[in-house]
Length: 356
Image (cartoon, rainbow, N blue to C red; front, side, top):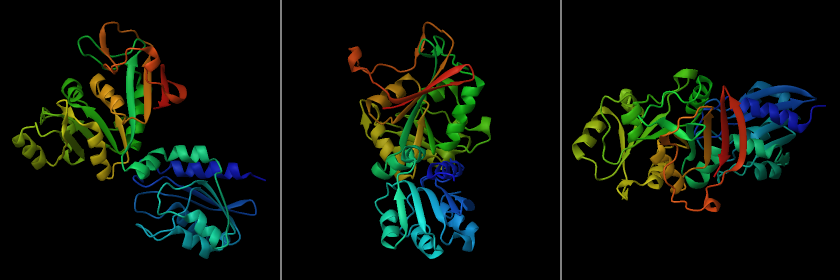
């Protein structure tokens, strides 16, 4: 007899298929099991599309009756882009519902609703894994600000470029491919204007044939050249600037099709917290910062970073550009400490992941 955990693991694998396709909705996977046989499978395939439970119930048909449903996230009980899933679950005659995570959306009361309607309901199976899958969605639901990943690719001695500014490429193809996979999954990538001027990056997901994320450029005085590669498709670009930016250039970029967010200046720089609030209003639930040392430091100081990904290559550069500029830390015991750390080898490089 397969345990609840095994079925929930299968539902999680299904949910992962929605990566990069469902935001700002959560990824959800669902299985319907009857007499030890899987009779229905489903996952949330795209934003606005049918929910995982509906997909699985449709596949199961009449076989759902007296079956057990395994779903990674609490079924919705309210009208949104689609009708409430709890109604379909009740109508299907499913006997038991096993849930991974509680939904962070205050409108969702699926667990209570199904219990009230007489369905045997259990919540919290593989909770940690189910929560981690939707960490961006949960943060966005709670705060209306995007879940923010800070990504750094550096040498063993903490450099992201040589003294001449050369940075191509410190890490391996495998590591860069991994970054492109994450770009495909997040809603937006963010860089500072210095990175655009120095590297002229494309910020796409070409190494994995993925979707291109929205590109957010932090540019307090609108120095961005109109020939920049990031402006190839201006409709996918948001430029965060201040009222110090020239109005003419602002209008020009607007006409090209780029979105401009104007926030108040903070020490002559763009106020990153305000930018994050604005991005939240644009339905951007996750951002990966791929900036230079100044943007990296500002993001940490402004406390907008949730997760850090540091790729370290087995190379020593010596005098060069450091990964993170001054954080104003004068004592080691005041250093920023990561929690929930994991490490893995990617190509020849080492990836350290942790949370702030």
